[in-house]
Image (cartoon, rainbow, N blue to C red; front, side, top):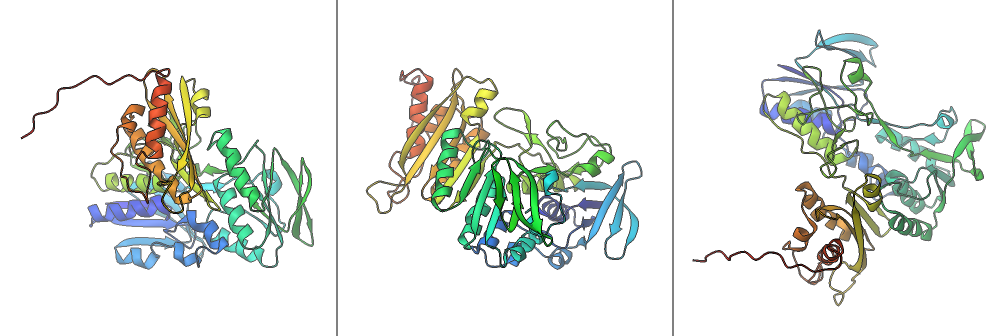
Length: 464
């Protein structure tokens, strides 16, 4: 059996490793159009900021390490076409300039996403960048040498992380956002404002409700941006306005593309084309809270999808369980996390939802260095179902509590069930009533209209 994988980063290499482990006799070949495989793209801003020392630190596996496992890795080989009937792919060797037809029995397309470049950002001016991979990061690093003023366009996860890390390098940073506030649809408005305040407090010039119309330049290098708010001067510009799934190969092969713009796959990561799989950031998935198809490209999701595809291509059986939209990021000392639905999301979906806000400390208030943490829980009236959570903590590690909520959402649990969870307690870690339990208790009361209803009594089990 010959398994061909297009794309050698998260999903592709996870699939290759899993398939080889389960089917040692299979021939597995990975075609990667770039020069680096198996790296952590989420760490890119932190290399630029100095928190991570070197680009090589982001690389989990080298091509030689994968080859030693019996996996063929061909760098700078770009797959440009798929013939699903003949079960071949067209491959261009970018170094030799040679084009070949490569057969496959099973094909995985794990081509990820590309950073969006608005028309105004399609330019030959030096100093204009996007950040999707290590070569992008290295280009920004070179551009920063001698730079004084950086403008980041887009205030989502990447834009906010870049703002902090470049500001830490002594650069003057302007953060432009077309929408009304930072963090986009990740958070409800009240929580977005808290993030903006933190960024501004550390010296980042945040301007929301501003659109960009063009660039200015001199001697071949960018000097500024023409915006609805006037000219913004900058000697380096980073565009972080979103991504689009790379589905061209899949579309050409006859695979169905979903309404999200990402590949439509079943729970086994199979497309509608026999023998063709897709996994990673170029795929949509099922949201376990809403049961709708969504495109939420994140690192764990890509790795998990790749693992599932690898198992199935090797002849075994696995399914991808879906997502609940869990995300987390840091801006300076502030940790920010969300999972499930925000109140805004629930309202737009027409759900009868209500939210409560609780402010507490990340551990027992009498224990040293207790820091504030804010939690918003959202639930559904009638069903009592938990819909989502948002957390902001002045100790950024404290918001990892979001995983408790994510696990509960995975099982479509109810708010009252969250309150009854047996969570760990010791003064250095939480109050005796953790902030999540306090929020769940308050939300349970709110969902019942302020009435506290005792659960039906059950007979105690016999002991001994």
